[in-house]
Length: 199
Image (cartoon, rainbow, N blue to C red):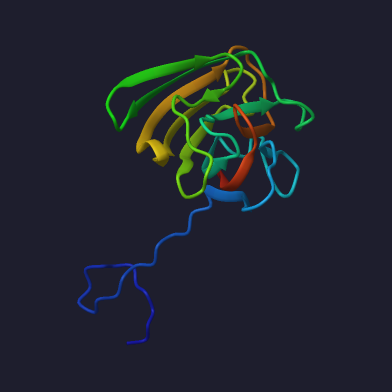
């Protein structure tokens, strides 16, 4: 056998067609730290190789983060001036949580694109905000920029888990070129976050 991978999985030789490598999903940036307490994690078009423009139709952010303050909620804001400022109004967002000890409730906000319904603890061994955020229409000037999210928030001192899902939208059309993750209270003490672009 020559080792050449063929184009027919049904051949008696057992050769298998090679998978096509896709460039439709591109890892744009990864941030990781275990010390210090930055106020937020940001990605800005044109900074450190990040591309937030019409190149990609969607963006996905995967994150694991621990806040410096107990009962903090993971949140998202956007920039339309390459990170000079992040908009603190002009959103409508709704999230829902179901928690381990029983019960469900929701949260709404206008100061964040995403505002988690459940909080997490502030110790690495007992608390973590873990989730996937999907951004739509970041560079679209004809439609509203929006985000959908699924997260889990642990608060182990209380033996509690908050399962969250939600979505948010800007209330006016406009292109955005910066993404900011922050906790609604306090800073970030541990995090690993990755941003992907999807064509």
